[in-house]
Amino acid sequence: MTTVDTERTVTVTVNGVPRETTVPVRRLLSDALRHDLGLTGTHVGCEHGVCGSCTVLVDGDPVRSCLMLAVQVEGRSVTTVEGLARDDHRGGQVLHPVQEAFRECHALQCGFCTPGFLMTIAAGLDKRDPAAELTEEEVDDMVGGNLCRCTGYANITKAVHSAAAAMRDAR
Image (cartoon, rainbow, N blue to C red; front, top):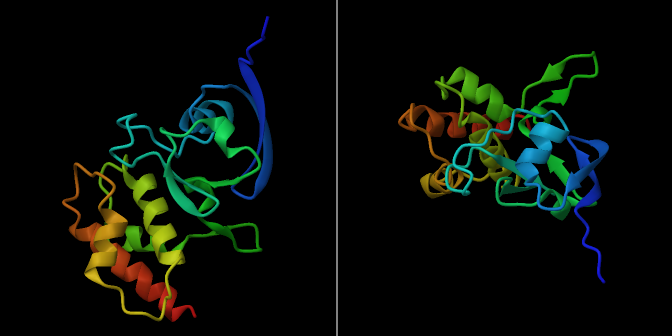
Protein backbone atom coordinates (compact mmCIF):
# COMPACT_ATOMS: atom_id res chain seq x y z
CA MET A 1 0.00 0.00 0.00
CA THR A 2 1.34 3.44 -0.88
CA THR A 3 0.90 6.45 1.31
CA VAL A 4 0.10 9.77 -0.24
CA ASP A 5 1.65 12.93 1.15
CA THR A 6 -1.07 15.41 1.93
CA GLU A 7 1.23 18.06 3.38
CA ARG A 8 4.75 19.17 2.71
CA THR A 9 7.13 21.55 4.44
CA VAL A 10 8.35 24.23 2.06
CA THR A 11 11.49 26.27 2.65
CA VAL A 12 11.56 29.45 0.61
CA THR A 13 13.12 32.90 0.82
CA VAL A 14 10.31 35.45 0.84
CA ASN A 15 11.23 39.12 0.52
CA GLY A 16 14.81 38.28 1.50
CA VAL A 17 13.85 36.34 4.63
CA PRO A 18 14.16 32.53 4.81
CA ARG A 19 10.75 31.09 5.69
CA GLU A 20 9.44 27.61 6.31
CA THR A 21 5.81 26.59 6.27
CA THR A 22 3.90 23.33 6.07
CA VAL A 23 1.20 23.40 3.43
CA PRO A 24 -1.22 20.98 1.79
CA VAL A 25 0.51 19.73 -1.37
CA ARG A 26 -2.16 21.32 -3.58
CA ARG A 27 -2.07 24.74 -1.87
CA LEU A 28 -1.63 27.56 -4.36
CA LEU A 29 1.29 29.91 -3.87
CA SER A 30 -1.13 32.85 -3.59
CA ASP A 31 -2.97 31.12 -0.75
CA ALA A 32 0.26 30.13 1.03
CA LEU A 33 1.51 33.72 0.86
CA ARG A 34 -1.76 35.20 2.08
CA HIS A 35 -2.99 32.61 4.58
CA ASP A 36 0.10 30.77 5.78
CA LEU A 37 2.63 33.61 5.73
CA GLY A 38 0.28 36.56 6.33
CA LEU A 39 1.42 38.53 3.25
CA THR A 40 -1.90 39.90 2.07
CA GLY A 41 -0.48 42.36 -0.46
CA THR A 42 -0.72 39.67 -3.12
CA HIS A 43 -4.30 39.98 -4.31
CA VAL A 44 -6.35 37.18 -5.83
CA GLY A 45 -8.78 38.33 -8.49
CA CYS A 46 -9.78 35.83 -11.13
CA GLU A 47 -8.03 32.69 -9.81
CA HIS A 48 -7.37 31.70 -13.45
CA GLY A 49 -4.15 33.63 -14.22
CA VAL A 50 -5.94 36.17 -16.39
CA CYS A 51 -6.08 39.39 -14.33
CA GLY A 52 -2.50 39.53 -13.03
CA SER A 53 -3.43 40.80 -9.56
CA CYS A 54 -1.62 37.90 -7.92
CA THR A 55 1.70 38.44 -9.71
CA VAL A 56 4.82 37.89 -7.61
CA LEU A 57 8.44 37.43 -8.59
CA VAL A 58 9.96 33.96 -8.37
CA ASP A 59 13.72 34.17 -8.75
CA GLY A 60 13.16 37.60 -10.29
CA ASP A 61 10.62 36.52 -12.90
CA PRO A 62 6.94 37.53 -12.72
CA VAL A 63 4.56 34.61 -12.19
CA ARG A 64 0.85 34.32 -11.49
CA SER A 65 0.81 32.96 -7.96
CA CYS A 66 -2.74 31.65 -8.44
CA LEU A 67 -1.40 29.20 -11.03
CA MET A 68 1.62 27.93 -9.09
CA LEU A 69 1.63 25.47 -6.23
CA ALA A 70 3.44 26.50 -3.07
CA VAL A 71 5.55 23.33 -3.20
CA GLN A 72 6.97 24.51 -6.55
CA VAL A 73 8.87 27.34 -4.85
CA GLU A 74 10.86 25.01 -2.59
CA GLY A 75 14.37 26.44 -2.30
CA ARG A 76 13.56 29.46 -4.45
CA SER A 77 13.24 33.18 -3.84
CA VAL A 78 9.84 34.90 -3.89
CA THR A 79 9.32 38.66 -3.83
CA THR A 80 5.88 40.03 -3.06
CA VAL A 81 4.72 43.63 -3.19
CA GLU A 82 5.63 43.89 0.51
CA GLY A 83 9.26 43.25 -0.45
CA LEU A 84 9.50 45.74 -3.30
CA ALA A 85 10.57 48.71 -1.13
CA ARG A 86 14.08 48.60 0.32
CA ASP A 87 15.46 49.49 3.76
CA ASP A 88 17.02 52.94 3.90
CA HIS A 89 19.48 51.83 6.64
CA ARG A 90 17.86 54.30 9.07
CA GLY A 91 14.96 52.08 10.01
CA GLY A 92 12.68 53.29 7.22
CA GLN A 93 11.82 52.20 3.71
CA VAL A 94 12.64 53.62 0.29
CA LEU A 95 9.98 52.97 -2.32
CA HIS A 96 10.99 51.16 -5.51
CA PRO A 97 10.99 53.62 -8.43
CA VAL A 98 7.84 51.96 -9.78
CA GLN A 99 6.02 52.46 -6.48
CA GLU A 100 7.12 56.08 -6.38
CA ALA A 101 6.04 56.62 -9.99
CA PHE A 102 2.61 55.08 -9.34
CA ARG A 103 2.16 57.48 -6.45
CA GLU A 104 3.39 60.53 -8.35
CA CYS A 105 1.47 59.74 -11.56
CA HIS A 106 -1.80 58.79 -9.83
CA ALA A 107 -1.60 55.38 -11.50
CA LEU A 108 -4.02 53.68 -9.15
CA GLN A 109 -7.59 54.12 -8.12
CA CYS A 110 -9.15 51.26 -6.21
CA GLY A 111 -5.71 49.64 -5.82
CA PHE A 112 -6.83 46.04 -6.27
CA CYS A 113 -4.75 45.44 -9.41
CA THR A 114 -1.84 47.60 -8.25
CA PRO A 115 0.34 44.90 -6.62
CA GLY A 116 0.34 42.85 -9.83
CA PHE A 117 1.18 45.88 -11.96
CA LEU A 118 3.96 46.92 -9.60
CA MET A 119 5.57 43.50 -9.64
CA THR A 120 5.32 42.99 -13.40
CA ILE A 121 6.60 46.49 -14.24
CA ALA A 122 9.40 46.34 -11.64
CA ALA A 123 10.62 43.05 -13.10
CA GLY A 124 10.46 44.43 -16.62
CA LEU A 125 12.37 47.59 -15.76
CA ASP A 126 14.91 45.80 -13.55
CA LYS A 127 15.83 43.44 -16.40
CA ARG A 128 16.46 46.08 -19.05
CA ASP A 129 19.34 48.44 -19.67
CA PRO A 130 18.18 51.63 -17.95
CA ALA A 131 20.21 53.75 -20.39
CA ALA A 132 18.29 52.39 -23.39
CA GLU A 133 15.29 54.31 -24.68
CA LEU A 134 12.05 52.75 -23.42
CA THR A 135 9.80 51.79 -26.33
CA GLU A 136 6.01 51.78 -26.34
CA GLU A 137 6.18 48.07 -27.20
CA GLU A 138 8.14 47.42 -23.99
CA VAL A 139 5.61 49.42 -21.99
CA ASP A 140 2.74 47.51 -23.59
CA ASP A 141 4.48 44.21 -22.74
CA MET A 142 4.93 45.24 -19.10
CA VAL A 143 1.35 46.48 -18.72
CA GLY A 144 -0.53 44.19 -21.10
CA GLY A 145 -0.80 41.12 -18.90
CA ASN A 146 -2.61 42.91 -16.08
CA LEU A 147 -6.22 44.02 -16.02
CA CYS A 148 -7.46 47.25 -14.45
CA ARG A 149 -11.12 48.24 -14.31
CA CYS A 150 -10.61 51.77 -13.02
CA THR A 151 -7.75 53.73 -14.56
CA GLY A 152 -7.88 53.36 -18.33
CA TYR A 153 -4.10 52.65 -18.27
CA ALA A 154 -3.00 56.18 -19.27
CA ASN A 155 -1.53 57.00 -15.87
CA ILE A 156 -0.11 53.49 -15.53
CA THR A 157 1.87 53.84 -18.77
CA LYS A 158 2.89 57.34 -17.66
CA ALA A 159 4.19 55.77 -14.43
CA VAL A 160 6.23 53.20 -16.38
CA HIS A 161 7.94 56.00 -18.28
CA SER A 162 8.50 57.97 -15.07
CA ALA A 163 9.98 54.95 -13.27
CA ALA A 164 12.24 54.17 -16.23
CA ALA A 165 13.50 57.77 -16.20
CA ALA A 166 14.12 57.63 -12.44
CA MET A 167 16.06 54.39 -12.81
CA ARG A 168 18.10 55.88 -15.67
CA ASP A 169 18.85 59.00 -13.59
CA ALA A 170 19.85 56.88 -10.57
CA ARG A 171 22.70 55.28 -12.52
